[in-house]
Length: 424
Image 1 (cartoon, helix red, strand yellow):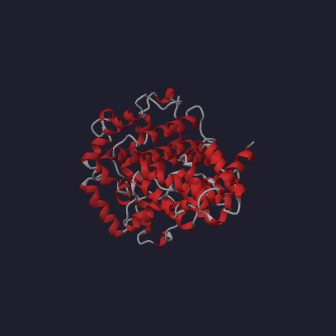
Image 2 (tube, rainbow, N blue to C red; image 1 turned 45 degrees about the vertical axis):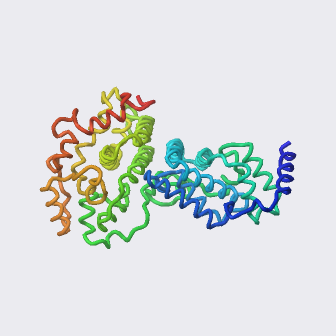
Image 3 (cartoon, rainbow, N blue to C red; image 1 turned 90 degrees about the vertical axis):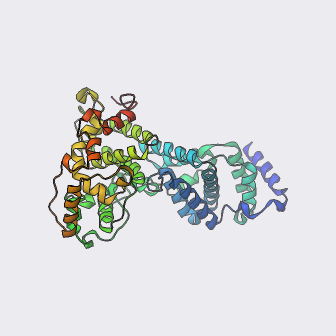
């Protein structure tokens, strides 16, 4: 039956007047694919979504990169998918952003090639049958393969999601989790990777010891930790040394995803009577969904919390995955690590643009002390406390009372139902 339908579609194609073909249907040339991806990525950038912090946009990047090396069938699917997503981003970027982020949250629960493939299929919008037909007719490489043309038209007219794609797409195209989104994937668990502690892999920077005052940055930014074994450690030292700033709105989702990966790493070596991996996941996913409802000031506070939480090592598992029978209140999720926040005032202020969104973090005395330390390259790890804050941040973090401060209100808003769905 399917073969009859495909044959009918092919006969339909043969009877098309060549006048319908024009350059608007040039979906399958390398330049067109690259252009569609760049438009898509640029339209989602306003939401701080990048190929580094989204599995779905990372998948688009991989497909664009592999387009020219792919076989004919896969080039057709890549061309159609990136064209459709590009058009969606032009018409309604906000809706596409939410679609991508929802699928990102689902994929990270089990980041496998198969799950990425199906999630991406759900993101690709329905494409008009006549547009697909015209684009295929405009693609010289496929005009001599009527069966392929008929199959593509059949599947795009009858199926939805990843069922529109040939099965070869998932097997031939390298949709490996670490390729689609390096900052969300635990490569240490991947048999293809021989890298040590590769979950912290960052874009290559200049060799760290070559930076002036490298030892100073290691002491003040990472508090003496090895940057190669610290979450994003190399990146933060690079930004401190170059006096550039990390965009916290882009970095926040990456930290939240890395926290989930860290939890998986520690799940088999913690006291299961005090915390569990399901609680960690449920609470992180709940926070990820809540981020979209926060203003930039609240996102800045959440970023500061996430930054400190990421540096708690195995303790982050307990602080995110605790059972409420032990710790009574969800407020433990922020009060348990807020005491460490002053120790990272230098890193947050010098490496990121957090102060653009939430004002100066350091008191005048702390800022002056840090500037002297930076100028002279001091290497003693500084000890900070709540008096190191600016008055505004001291108030935010509970200097005048833990239960009636901005951080308390923030987490009460995020966990307005007392806890994440499924947490216990």
